[in-house]
Each structure stands twice: as structure tokens, then as C-alpha cells.
View (cartoon, rainbow, N blue to C red):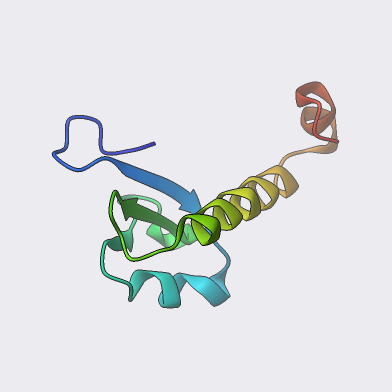
Length: 80
């Protein structure tokens, strides 16, 4: 979750390069500050993104981030 202290709660997640431009064209979805270069987006509460799609993007984000970890760290975290 992001936007602590902001008037609108936000969810921030990583997406693939192929989805970054598509997602940031949707109302309520912006490039995540400081992380846009690595394809992170910030989704405002009430953005025009169905809940089932948001959940799928969050699961995909977890997979993308986990793949970037070392094998040892993935094992330590139980996501090997």
C-alpha cells in the first residue's frame, strides 16, 4: 500500500514492460514515484481497474519481484 498521509489510498505494484504503458493510460493509475523506471505503478482507490484484474496484477507483481531475488533468499523466504 502506498499514499500514506494522502487523501486517496493507493496500491503500488510492479508490472511488466508490456503492461506499463497500458496501465498508466487508465484513469487513477500513475507511474509510481521513484520506481517508474522499473515499471512500478500506483493505483488510486476507485481507479478504473476491475478488482479481479487488480488481484491478478498483484500476484504477477509478486512473481516478478520474487524472480529477481537470489535462490538463497527465495529459499529463506519460503518462496523457492
